[in-house]
Length: 202
Image (tube, rainbow, N blue to C red):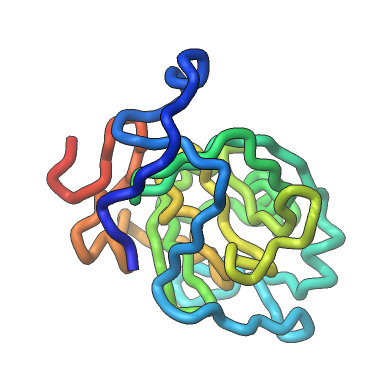
């Protein structure tokens, strides 16, 4: 369950400009999830891109590992008010994923669906141009299950609830359909620099 409060360390003056409003800096990586961590077996893992009940592209774990992987370093920000700087990830960018699948986006809206039943909406505009990836490694190691392994969506410029853990399906939808937390009062977009935490935030 998520909570409103988080108490972290006070940042140095030269780091403060990297912190969005209302955030506190941490060197930990707190684990927050909707429920228990699912056991996702690699031999059964599959990632699909879908639209209107049609599978546009899909990959097994071995097929996905053969796609071009990119390392990135990014600051991440949780809606519970913690931030961590310079996190290191590796995965397949959404641009590379669409290209590998030969997918021309049929809409501009995506609903991420996960192995634990979690969903969240992320417009394609927030994912193209190397802004997002399907991440499989963190800090040089395979992504731990509690942090979304074997693979999670990573959209570091938005609050971390948008970076859906245990990603299973990348579903194109006709409108910006809200996901699990968006239906329960969280902001439809979630930009930390504008403090878009809750529905009525600007």
